Image (cartoon, helix red, strand yellow):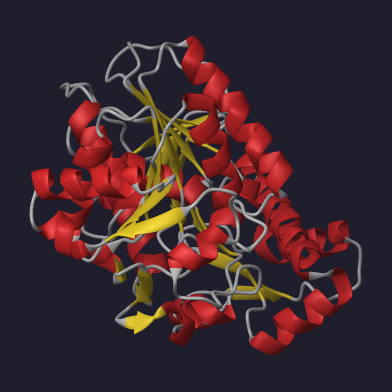
Length: 415
């Protein structure tokens, strides 16, 4: 029987949680095509979607479609995996998905948990912190599509859902499971329909997962989802995939200071082509330029293709195409570039950006990946078997050291 079906809001998030679960000896296949789970093995499946930035109605419809799949397989629990900072606008999509799951499964209260303490994202007293600062004082306030303008997650979620949202604070989670259950019961008796759990540290995440252990539905970021998987999944000695060797390349669709620093560190040793998404040439012309530049460079040394990430360049592209239009244009261009690189022999591929990773996987026709267990560089590594075997690192744009691109490509060989 399927124990846990995880519906991730983007591909990088799906692969990262799957890698952490795999490291515990629990198989976590990642499906990109929405196919039915086979119900065998670990009792766990991860669906990768592109619901994080989709229009709310489309996101809800996609989650409902996958919930149908999971219900048909007799899945005991459905968990929607959101990013650590609960990126969304006042229109959604976390709130609308929460409404769907709460109504569909009669889950009251529905528990939600944001944060990723090991990477400096925490929630305390309902407030979101990024690298030790309120999220509104961090680089997240400059996100081109989902800028974080309110650090109070209870308040921001309350603008997205019809339900009453309240917070279950660190005080109760730190006091132990029974104390947290008693407080949760009191909140429910007072009319709470959705409860945001603090995530001040890993212990909070573990206790929160135990609170949600027997619920039919829940929403959370990486530590909440992984903890649930460890409670519900079946461990095995199943053989794990090995990476694929071959020519390497990097595609950078994320923007901002982290991505620029990583691209600059790569450019100190190997060639980088920068594409300007504000360029008004047709997309095929941008793709052709990139592939003409790359074709003679594919070989023993890697190369990179990146979109311009400076604030001024992003603003120019958004002025011309709109915020979402510019993002989708960049994704389509880099997806087509990825397909051309793989057709020319690239077999190790690093992709920076959650939405970019989804676009690249779609362009390559990848329907399923198997995550590699977390290693010294963290998660996001995976192998695709079809249409051609590939080693991949699919990473969120704001994670990783400056040297992550070279480190990841080397790791694919070392593993």
